Structure formats: structure tokens, C-alpha cells
Amino acid sequence: MNFKHTDDFQSVALDAMREATRAVLDVYQSSDLGISYKAEKEPVTEADLRANSILEKALGELLPEAGWLSEESDRDLHELASREYLWVVDPIDGTREFIDRNGEFAISVGLLQHGEPVWGAISLPAEPRIVITAESGVEVFDLETRLEPPKRLLDKSAVDLRQSSICVSRTEWDRGLYRDQMQDLKIKPEGSVARKLALVSLGEYDLTVSLYPKNDWDIAGGLALIKAAGGLIIRPDMGTGIELKPPGARRPGLCCGRPDPVMQYHQYFQHKGLKLRDKYGAD
Image (cartoon, rainbow, N blue to C red):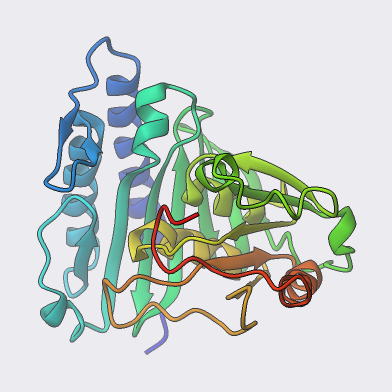
């Protein structure tokens, strides 16, 4: 059975995103972010934990048959692989940006059906805007109202790569991974990968590129938005699509956005002899 964007589903999911956004903003605007560290020395804040709890309760009740894969929850990947539906959640994508208070963080929620992104929502709390998939395109809300009607924003994609606006990881930028591309292309560093995917789905950039591997919770919601907006999602090295199964595996770097410049970037990537990195943080 194919997933349907019913009014009831959209309403409950949007309410959950708004509640999580308010909780995140409460922490963001406080003097104490409640920072602790996980075993791998990655920071986690009180906002991560509050948003995760809100979303797990609300979305779990909305679709009880779905599994739950979140950066901030325990998980049994073998059991999750047997589920038709799977919620994939990053309660704060860009925790370091959150801690730095630069606004470039996001809340990312994706729903997979047999590993395929069929629904997604990304909140940009610092703005605040919530971008959500609709039956035909994407729509944008603030914490009270809808800001724009649903639109497919990436259909008219006859844009030349060299004239396209490209957003990339600030970490990758700072490491010099795009040094050889800067003379040819219009590249701008941004924070959270989920935030970049949301901005591309809204047509505020033509495409986004990442050379580092990604976790499912980094990209599931954003890939659903890109699809709903009429965009294309590929590996920049091979030009093939990206599957989110089995759950929990690291995915390769990606390129997604307007179809024409995305495929042109793949050709550029091969012509320049560029390489994806096989682990996060590699130069």
C-alpha cells in the first residue's frame, strides 16, 4: 500500500514538529544548553533530548506500526529492517551549530516505506520555518500558520551548473575539500545537512553537494523534501541513486537538487577526477 498524505496525518505531524520546535527554541534562548557528551565524544544538548521525546511520542502514536530510528534513541537495526515503515529522526541536526548559536541547525524527520523516503519535514527553528512534504510538492509553515501553498519548486531545472547556486558543508569547506572547484562554481558553505536539503527543496539553492558519508537521520527527511519538490538525488561519483536500506548504514556523499545541474555536477565530478571520502572527517 502506497503512503498517502491525509489531512489528519499532516495535521498531527505538523503539530508534533511545532511542539518540538518550541521546545528547542526554549533551550536555545536559555543561558544553559544542557550540554553532555556521548561515548564517541559527540555533544548532545537538552534540546536534542526534549525534541526526541516529543517526536517519538507523537509520531509513534500517529503511525504505531512504524519503527523508530533516531540519533538519540537506542535501536535494534535487525528488528527495524523488518518494518514496512520507519521513522528516521535527528532531533537536532547540527548540534555544534546549535551550541555556537549561529542558527544553522535543523530538526529532521523522515518516514521511509521499504527504505524509500515517502514523507518528510524539516524545521529551521532559528527562522522559524517548517518545510513539509505535501501530496503535490512542499509547503512551508511557521509556528502558527501556513506561509505558502504547496509547490513543486524544482521542476523548471534548465539551469547551467556554472550559473547555479550550490551549498556545501561548512566542515567540508573549512577542510578545503572544494578548493579546486571554487574557480568554476558558485559555492557557499552552510551548516546542518538537513537545513541545506530544506533550502534546496525551497529553491533557495539550486543544489547541494556533500563529499562525506551520511547517516540516515541526517538525510531521510531532506531527501523526501527534494523528491516532493521535483528534484534529483544521486551519488556525485557514479550518478546513481541512494537507497536508505538496510536501516542504519552509512550512505555515500550526495548531490541533489534541480535535475539538470545535478547531472552536470556528476559529469564535472568525473571530469575533474574528484573523489568521495569513505569516512567522516577525511581530507
